[in-house]
Each structure stands twice: as C-alpha cells, then as structure tokens.
Image (cartoon, helix red, strand yellow):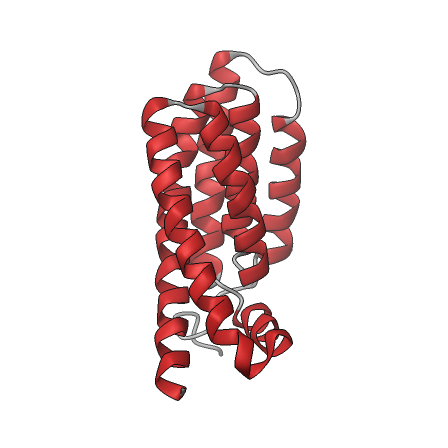
Length: 171
C-alpha cells in the first residue's frame, strides 16, 4: 500500500485552469457590489491555490527567453526586465494607494507583458484581473486583488534579480 503522506500531491493544474477561465467569464459580466466582492475573494483563493500548486515562474519559459536573446544580450535583457519590474512595483503601489485608475491600467498592462515573457503565468493572470478591475473602476475588487498581485510581483522581482546576479557572475 502506498504511503499517502509521502506520495506527491495530485496535479490540480487542469482544474485550476477551468476555474480560472470560469472566473474570467464571470468577471466579464455586470455584477453587483456583493457579487463583485465575492468574485475578488474567489480570485484571491484561486491565486493561493495556484501558488501552492507550482513555483511562481516557469523556468523553462524564462530559460527559453534567455536562449532566444543569446549569451551577449541575455544579461542586458534581464537587467532591463529587473528595472522595468521595479518601476511597475513603484507605479502600482502609488496607483493602488490613490486608486489612480489610469496608473493601475498602465502598470498592469506592462506587467502582463513582463510576467508573460518571464513565465510567471499566475502573475500575468492576476495583472489581467487587476487591469479589468481598473477598467471597471472597481475599488473593492482592486483592493482585494492587490496584495496577492504585489506578493507575486515581489517573487518575480526576486527571481529576476537572482538570474541577473547569476548572469553577472558568469561574465
């Protein structure tokens, strides 16, 4: 009999994707205040489950990006990505504090691209959700999504800074 304690956890990724797609469809519909708040709570819970399921960054995607850039350009690419991520973090923090919808929309737009390029799919999805909340000027949803998104952004910044240091050490 297999030991259930030492057995690897089941791969919930397909179920989490279905749930993410369902929440995205729901988010695209007009919802009242309590329903919008419940959606934000469900998105936060899902983000937590997704984080527990796997690492923050798909290393294969990130390494493919570096390989595409080549050994001469990769250090510059990673340095620029780190700079851009820090700028997004600063801008999002400022935008969320003031509920500056234009700032939030702009920063999440950039973050969607950076997270997707780096292989941080959950962060990319969180940025898309916050962008949608900003387009709808939904303060409750934006405030509910912000902590998880900012935590994921910090994780990606740490990952990219580590990669940057590793590339610098090889040079």
